[in-house]
Image (tube, rainbow, N blue to C red; front, top):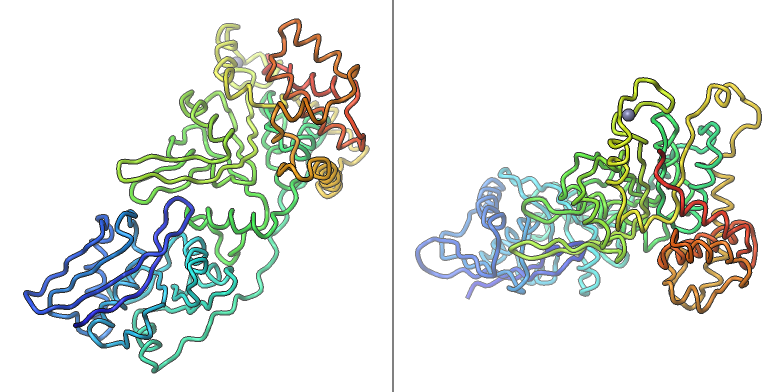
Length: 506
Ligand SMILES: [Zn+2]
């Protein structure tokens, strides 16, 4: 009998699943048989493995080679199984001691020359291996820092199949990889750069404090993009668990910045309005990849010129935003990615995007209305904060007096407000005002009766829906937290109502 076993990890969405790789050599016509639903990519992997084994100076067994990947029910996609297959084949052929590879997890794609190439999704793969009780993983050199983020696992980094074989044969041992010190992420753009725009600055501060979705309307040049880009800087840094979640998504998306294996700042994604559905919510051919919506998990998704996005795209985003996760279905399986994302929409007043008061605008009132109505409906209903920015006047530019507050100063207030909200919600599993369900909001944290009069009148008049009423309440609580109040008063309700009822700039 000539049987050997190693381990690798497949990915379903952002979850890794440990896969057992078994290789059996038997007498018979030389051939390779795959068992366990491997996809076309894994089939190609057999050809790479054969070339890599031969080019590393070994023989590929001229026997009947049966390769089994289990659990069989899990779809196995991607090229990350190459190294595990090669090592299992060499162990079955007695080139390597089978006992040394029986518990080992191996990740990485092989080049035809035997070089070991980086793959996506190494962080979630190593997390899964550790959770399954494995203590040692072999990864490509370029993935080593990322793999070493996982506690309790020895990471062996190799540049080629030859190095892995020399290690396992006991000739040249690989030593466990130590993660080098990484530079802290450079600071993002600062709020001190934003001139004027008191209403816009206030809106991003409230959005950051309560986790509210935000719509910024206004003419080009008013600073919508500048403000949106500065929102992540106002959010607290990611804690360890959140950082691992965000890093795992970036790893699968292939967007992990080199040299910075752990993402510690809330991400910022700004897809173009021509982006496909797959680019936005996830998909792609082969392995299902997270879209911008999930890459912005625990960060900010900025959709500039939001009315230009396809209506179907905007409508599709509504449910994932509500649920905090998105599931992408395919014929050969589905994948779920988290997307607890804060949305910032920006809209120009009209399709030609002329500055306000600019005589160049030739849009008819009907065209303007039609343009703005593209944003109406279910998605807009979920936006708590709607702010119209006036054009930046020459005077505001020239008036250098009173330098604008910096990101650091505003972030400190945001942190205090978030702490107050978290303290109030202790024991509920919630921490942000934007997350509080309507029922809980009305039953548990009711503001003084009189302070709601304005919102109640808007409800009676029909200018505010029941859902909208709850949204006003949530923002009012955030305003109270920012102001250091125990409960929102009439002023907070009035300000929240003003931001809810604001229409897209006409
Ligand atoms: Zn126009």
